[in-house]
Image (cartoon, rainbow, N blue to C red; front, side):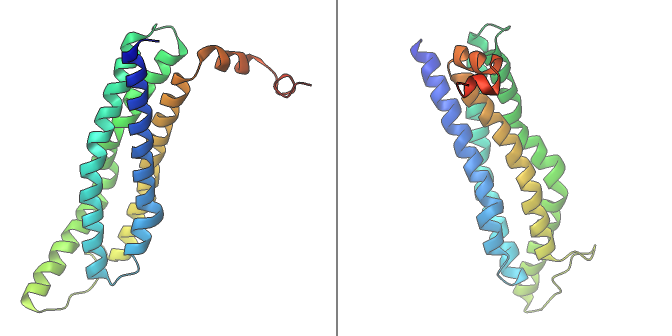
Length: 186
């Protein structure tokens, strides 16, 4: 196997799985921990998590898409690895438009609330934790964490495509054509 292919597979798999882990940990660990704080602090912590996460996730999505795109370019268009790498090339960077379109409204509400808390704090005033729509900061953060799980599913699908495309295609084809009993040796 050419060195460029091995490097691209390694980069594609590593970056996509790192992206998956980083994305999933936001909803499973970081946001639930931040939600234990009072609203003003929680939304500030969410914003830090969101901005740092984005700074890491966007380059990882781009790098993994470039790696899988390169692999697809080098493969037979009729092959399963080609199709899987094309799917990964589409799925992995799709988190950017997903973030803008699906998470965007919730992001905007949380950012507005963070700014409102900061302005009130500067003036020494207290404000309600609810947004204009009546949603609390904690409800918005919970909604964000749930929507982020959907974004992680996109990454998981892309990462899975990169891994499956990299394994020996003959073994995958052989397994796919066998019945469960044959696979178990019965």
